[in-house]
Length: 61
Image 1 (tube, rainbow, N blue to C red):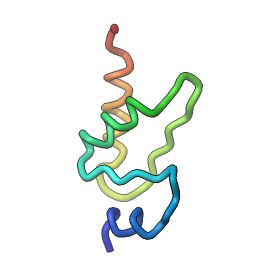
Image 2: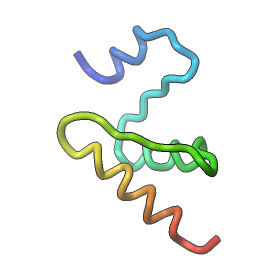
Image 3: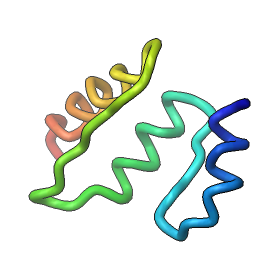
Image 4: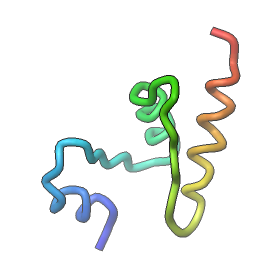
């Protein structure tokens, strides 16, 4: 069972599968708004998405 399979079977409009950590980071960067809270759960290196996103958000625009 893959993450993609789980998301496909969920049939929920607010669920998105991103195949790589970089794609997940870019996706979240476009979706999150001021005041949102991001919680990452899972095994492995999924926590890196949050770290990467923090670095992107800290960059001057």
